[in-house]
Length: 476
Image (cartoon, rainbow, N blue to C red; front, top):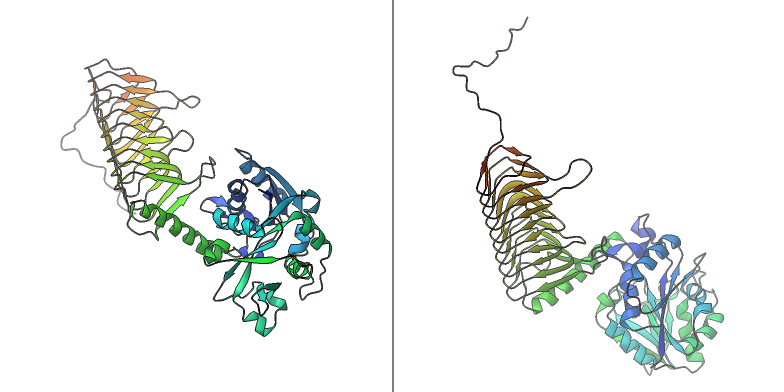
């Protein structure tokens, strides 16, 4: 097989995005557009990827080098196009980095959803000695270069929209901006480019007519899925592509048997904080209601039910668990686990390190962080458990908190099996509540409680009968 070198054009400013962020770093499904494109180098087992930068070059290069470093199987290089004088001029900057004997695959940094199989077919069409173009037929081809064919249906060239005649503008087969070309031929054609056109730029597409003139076969690999070659030039286009991409992911899940209440209101994203790719792994009979966002790797066991408007990141939810609406679970790097048949929410928050056993109940406005709750433990209302180890069947009262931070260090609270914590209690860590112990409501506990003991720490109640509230003084 011929060696592949991927050439990604990422120099454009993206004026219509109206953003300080370079266009190729705008995010789709939680990841920059350019990173989606760069994935193709790995999918195609390329030996190198050359990214041509220009506008915001330093920012683009820094963001891309860091993201591509983990597990990279290809060499990554950057070249700069300054100033930007057209697509042909961009590729000319990469000529010193092109290797002989290989095939160059030219991609665009703002076209993120091309399938690897499509690119493999394009490379096969190039066959190591031909120029292969990826084309698509569009109902409205405005702005795209038109594929010009002769009477025998052979490709003769590409005419850019601004240079096209009225007859040529009626052509609906367009060039996608993606091609595969032998490096040895590309070098010579690039050296012959001129800027004698309506925009005064060096067009990469001019090499098609050169190939025809040189007797080199030109193959057009035509696809019907326009989404694979859709680019991003504005916030509206980015939003449209996001929805199309999410719908594609939703359909793939439904084909596996996942029940989505509305596939148009579903999101699966990469986690930009941890670098974890968006992946939703589901058992049988999983049900997901509307407006749910999944980030990073999320596992849903058999029969899991996810209520509406939930956000779940980097978490594993075991079989039979029910996540009620408006619940927020974010495992970040530590992860979060929900046990079998647990009930979570509504309006609950599980933070990194939350490890919940079977049939645990976490109710409305309860927050759990870096804590383990054993089977059957319950915190049903308005509570906080941070840096805690909670035993089996513990009942944790409404309004109670673990005071785990002393202003400098975090400390752990241990609540052993079958303990009962009353409402509005403060457990000042480090502290242990022994097995079967009880803490009376409204108590502040700073000393450990022995197993089976009752601990009450609150002020004595005072009652004054027939007490009169202070009255306002008369005005004047």
